[in-house]
Image (tube, rainbow, N blue to C red; front, side):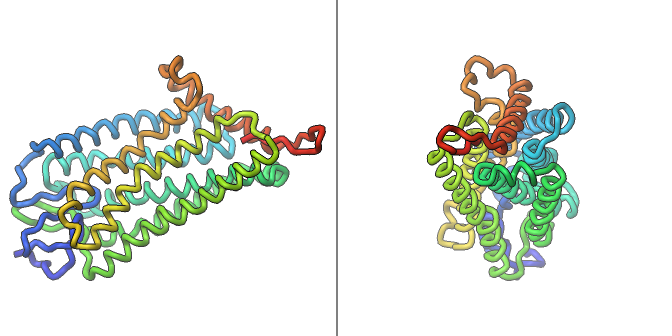
Length: 346
């Protein structure tokens, strides 16, 4: 029997090894006595293949965005937002091979530090991504509602400070993912798992991630959208809606990707759902991981001419950032029409 069976082994379910229950990590599967030495079942192969595809697309796509937004085009406030978002996704994809190896071998073959750090990076990606999307939404709302103030006060330096604060807050909220992570030898294999001493700790971590990583950001973004749409409809101000569609696509993609993860994490705190949690949470994590490779393609393919120009990924990403810059400049410049209304672009 494990030497720590008094702890709350809460991965996919709040069980301990004494009861011979399957014990999974929200980020990676954990071997069970019935598990084969290597990945052979359909679900395991599917998840491993999906993660490899996510890693390749994520590193390639986000690498292009970092190169374009960071080195190839003129820096603007908007490129700072999207560059930071790409860095977050790229960082996650860099460490994705650790989870792929874990999935294939059914064993954590790395050290305790990497067990903690890999989990920390995933949750850091979740918080930093949603915080950056909130920042983008609020920034767009400010440009529409207060164009004069935005033109005078929006600067790259302020944007960098805001991004730094977002990353610091994300890191602080991601610390429990590292603090409660531990290694244990079970059935002659090494397991990377969440070792909560009390079930209350587990509930607190799950609720904190759901509230700060989903609910509050969703409410802020919905409010920003309401204000933007109300302003646009009242003044008939939109000349180009591509930047607005890009922002919408990024946000919708994030919430669709991460919603199952939060649902199964919340179900994990209630043992009566034990039958659906293991498989559901594994696919929930896989779906959440896809968000790290989708953003570059959303930048490129949100144009009306997607069918004709889908092959021009590099130039489309660059044109998206350039249009963001042009639309913001137009949005912060006031033009007086015949009826005295302001003309702003989103």
